[in-house]
Length: 318
Length: 318
Image (cartoon, rainbow over all chains, first blue to last red; front, side, top):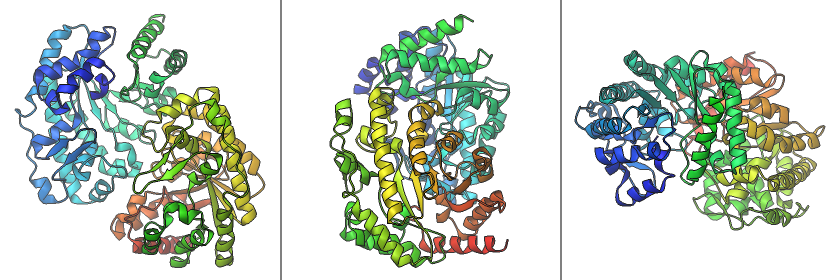
């Protein structure tokens, strides 16, 4: 996740001189930031490329800007069929720095741990493109969703995501993650009708390449439908206990699910909560220990180290 | 809900001359605003008093202000045991205008529909008091939660809520609603340990008075625990289909659960979604048709009218 570096002072130093977009679109910088966590924590089980899910919107023709402090803002939000018609398919050049960064990181990791590539899922991308930025109630997206314009938009986004994920695999990504970060705002009927078919197209198109993690937050009501859409691994946030989530997902691997806020708590509480996650996983194969969402910026880096060490010690005992 | 009037032009006119706090603390104004929906929609099944869940914090000693446009902000957020010790118990005078407003509204309603009183639940109140305002990640609340200070704070808040709800019943409220609006940010282990006992105290204390609705949003993972805490009716948001939510709640009444965004959709879609809620309720006794959260400000008032008429026509057919 992009947030991966925010708690590291090395990251904050790089950010002092470079905007997020500059880092993402300069292969050497993106690679350098991607390598910060694996260098500081060589025991991590995987690395993830530093990028941003919204990067993909620009080459399609969505004029997105990343302001200082505020969230992203879009000069030409999608409102009509003409807006969707004007979107270009993703070309091979625009996001080349992402693929180059993957090649650099792969070389530097030298097989010590696998590298994860990722993309935003169509709903989450569409929600930004339609709302013109972040949103609280997603009213514009929910209004567009019930029109034919939505079908065209979601199909174009799914096409772009498939293209982008394939290129990341070609560049060396050994696993992928599809982030449908904000889809939890939808009721399950809406998810089934207006989201599932497009996310499913992505999983179907990538079947047989590399394993894919399907992730959303606030998705306790959507787990079965997300599983139906696809994913070798379902990423869950911290709200539902891991065993309850797993029993609803069925025979898939699961990723999660410590509350990121726990990393700001005293050490004893942090490790107790980590043990609770492990207890609920009960050593079953197919559990990827992780937080339930990104690492929060004020997280003390020594707590990250302690958590990694603790989880490894506990799982090695088995 | 306070939001009840925001879509009405009569409300916006009153708001042009009065701050929210002025309205809440002037019995005649609060009563006037409370009467706007029942006057415009005489077929409503219930009215709710116009108030604000955060009102209760001021007389306890929390210096809360309601800025223009931004959310509430608190000059002296709760951080230490000393801060909690300094909180005063709720006296009978400070919120007298709320109880007076209830008396006025009751007289004006003249038995045409019942009147609902309400309060915020301890977690949601504490989250504001500790964070100093609205929050995205509730990091301060989650940090305080695991200390003894939290126990003292939650008990004081529960005491105040019990007092406030009792006074509303004495004034004539025929039903109560406890809003734990933001508790969905907690994992279920945290809810069980740090929230449930205090909410439960409130339901236990009010048992035998009037029916109480227990409401939260983003609570698909908490429904069983919320039911365990208490409430004659569980209010659910729109995320989980009504029948799925009801089967998890068990033998309680249920309130919900149309997505408020649906009220901004074309009429045909709105009524189709309303029918879907009714279909899932299947005419079982104990369903209170409602939105899954407050009415959104840009809602066209004629859609509210159409929805009320439609639901009454459909349920009268049975």
